[in-house]
Length: 412
Image 1 (cartoon, rainbow, N blue to C red):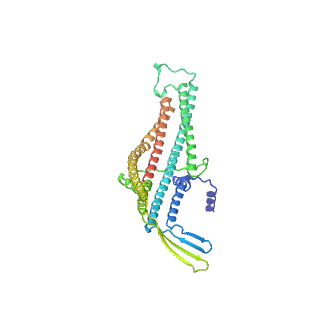
Image 2 (cartoon, rainbow, N blue to C red):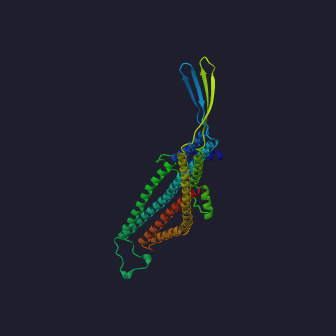
Image 3 (tube, rainbow, N blue to C red):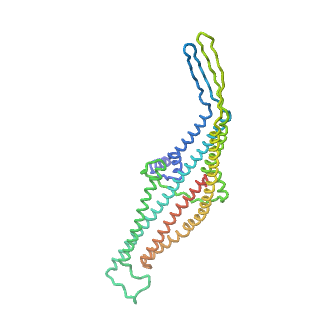
């Protein structure tokens, strides 16, 4: 009976779901139209490869000579055997290049989704913190008002009669005005954060193929990854996996095939022909023949070969230039990521806890009149700035790491 009751409670209990980064990545990969467009582009190229594997359609013709004869003619153009093979290789390399473009588009959109997710997590953390700061100012303002009201009709002691700091005069109206000003600034920052939150939620929804206004589940905070591979290992992964380099590499192979195809254009194309002559009131006859093209216009063929050669050299240089650019970006990101990780850990393990403790101590000291209100407000401002800086750096680091993963072509 007890097990049945627990089961019923689980069924009727409200469920809370967390939207994980993996969930977002899967939805973007499955629904984003830019990725789908590249998929269809690759499929179209693959279909073209299949079409080019066949000979052109044969030609059929019927001729009727006036009064006595009908001719039925069929011819088939047959290119040199290696021409079709080379043409298929060229299209095959182009197809592999399109797959590289597809992979690059997918990784670009996934990076954009990751960046938005990280910014939204940091935004929500800052909203929670900023709300706490506003509440702290409310509490401080109420406390200052009570102190001011209870001492408004009392005169401050003369300077020679000042007691110890524990009994120093209670802050007056100037402290209340200062606290209200600080609270207004904090509340303005809170409104700005909420505005950013609305935009980031809409952007993340759109990236996942959902209506912009759809409410999002609570986001789970992704762990802070640490770079484990050496620079040389990452460079090798980059050279092996980067989608842009792969696309350019296959295009070099395609233009090599096109160069060979241009050379083969001077080879003759054979056209066998069969004609059946039906002659009225006489014996029918058949005619067999063979035709071929004559590569007479060599300048045209030479120009085709030159174009293919120049395209090949151009793509090779693009490949080399892109490799240099990506290596430069790789070393910038890796060195920055390692230093950035150390800074974030210092903030998380030392600076933020210290600032929080200092604020708590200041709050306690103010409540027993050991420090004036402006000292407490300084601690609140410092802690607020430290917390904002930490979550900004956290989002920046996570974004850099995601960019590094996009660059090398695999999750690290």
